Length: 316
Figure 1: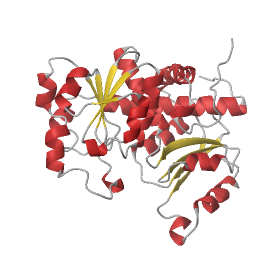
Figure 2: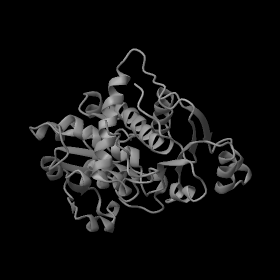
Figure 3: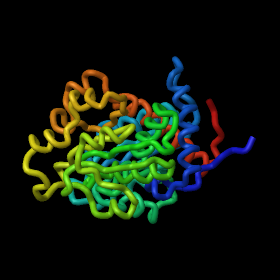
Figure 4: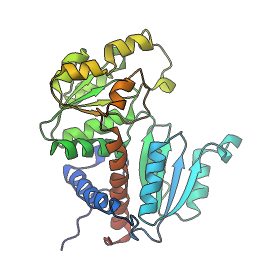
């Protein structure tokens, strides 16, 4: 049997992947989802592989998801967070990384506030690097798990209509979703305040829909982006109340569609701003499916990159 390999040595962004790469990741994730349903969920696939999780920004879902994926694959783990590290004493990124590299780790997961941090890291190491979010640039595993979740629920992404709603300007999730969805043939529109829609969207042949009601009626799935308040250094809309009135997902809006649509959110959620508790508590979203799929997707990415670099064979 021919062993398929992913075309990249690092996962820095969806823009570096091919359609075949994404399909391979999805196929591999399907296998790992089956494993995660077993009573014993751990496999020895990455036994002997050491992975460093470097988080220079706060994270809950992504950090826990990567850690769980690594443990399910039997990898050895080193965890690093900015809080409590020598960075607070003035140590630079490169010095911190050099110290960790001296420990001879095999793979590095990095989240950093600066766009391009993961790519910068590849210039200093032969270890495999996975981007867990770099500033407002990309968040590739989130883009993969969102697209995988749509594919799983709708049976395909090709020709499906996906509305990306909210703070597109400051979102690394938006760009990764756009790259992944377009590679698999989806039709995309963006919706939100014009001030939060970047001009480069035109380069992707994506239409802007200013009216949420029309956008929801058009789409098969809506991915709601969090307002990135921590990245906003100016006023982009009059108030949170007005934002919610115009662009918040409400139960009445969903019921008025008279059709089923998928509702996604990468988290964390600002309840009562981007989406109401009514919608969340009535199980109208697939947000928890996204969380579950995130572990399988990250297991797939870790396995495929490690197997290419280290010649690891599948061991279920």
